[in-house]
Length: 190
Ligand code: AMP
View 1 (cartoon, rainbow, N blue to C red):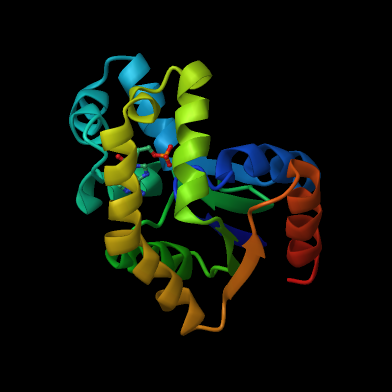
View 2: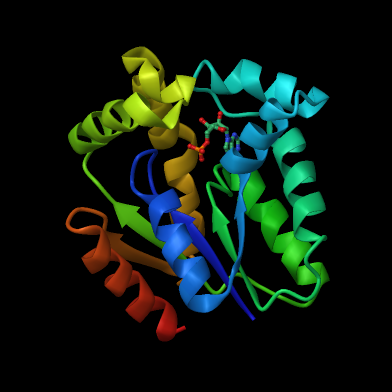
């Protein structure tokens, strides 16, 4: 079973490329951002809590996020593989994910990072905000906060997987199909 973490700053193209990888490899796609947005849409208690952090560009607390991820993950016991998108975003989440998988006799195959310069991210996110309907894409201050949180809290997760020899970098700049091809080739080697 392949367990891939698709990594990268907000606006790197994780969502776009996930759709392609799910189609190509049949992964179960677990995007914590998507799950939070679906909870907001359905007006659940979890959605209300998550929204209060998301609207400010902050991370939802680890305990809430980890419990939710574990619960979603456990719904797919027959999956051929998982694509984790937007999770783990902190070292505590990475450690929790290792524990969850290890208990089931699995492990992360690789973290693949889509690397995109900061200046390009802000342009992409503001552009996406015109059509995505996401309040966190529409406000330049919230975008700046999300990129800052990425560097401070999420970037160390790369070191966590690098130390395990599992980090693979791919340029996230270029055409969507060229990036998809690089991702596909990288996953095929795992
Ligand atoms: P995303 O769709 O991945 O860009 O996530 C949108 C927002 O959801 C983030 O800015 C966070 O507020 C929240 N979020 C998503 N995934 C996580 C996570 N793994 N840990 C904490 N907060 C998260």
